[in-house]
Image 1 (cartoon, one colour):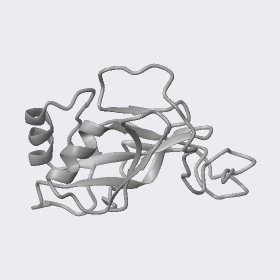
Image 2 (tube, helix red, strand yellow):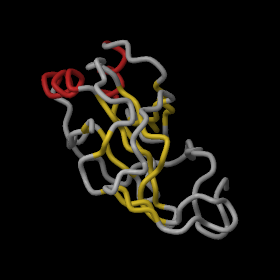
Image 3 (tube, one colour):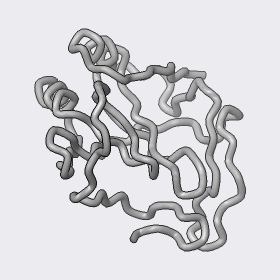
Image 4 (tube, one colour):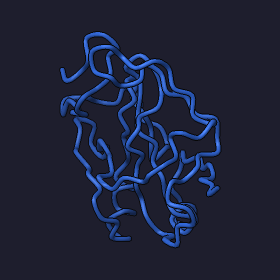
Length: 160
């Protein structure tokens, strides 16, 4: 449900609460095949302890795992040459394919905030397998490392 019949883009991210993880591993963040972000209880505790606002954790059938998203949007420069967009879908107008060559570029210039968790408004990927990128502050990245969160990969967000 909630997908475009042409390009399979998700209009509204709604996780099936009966979804269960087929095998548990030692990462604190992972994505489903259709690009839903799942996090561990350890990740959720980290976010609660650090009082990050506007985060959603919806429990799934697998105990200790949650569908995760941020309601706080980080503005990226979608006109930058590092972002490659295909033609828009004729039905829903979203891009059928949105690819990125790192680094991302910020739309807000020099961001003085260093401790935050956001996500991009635009979703990246193709054929209904797109997801927003999670953007965190440099201090947040260090806190995550110090807390011992596993399975995280960091890329820089640059200012022009």
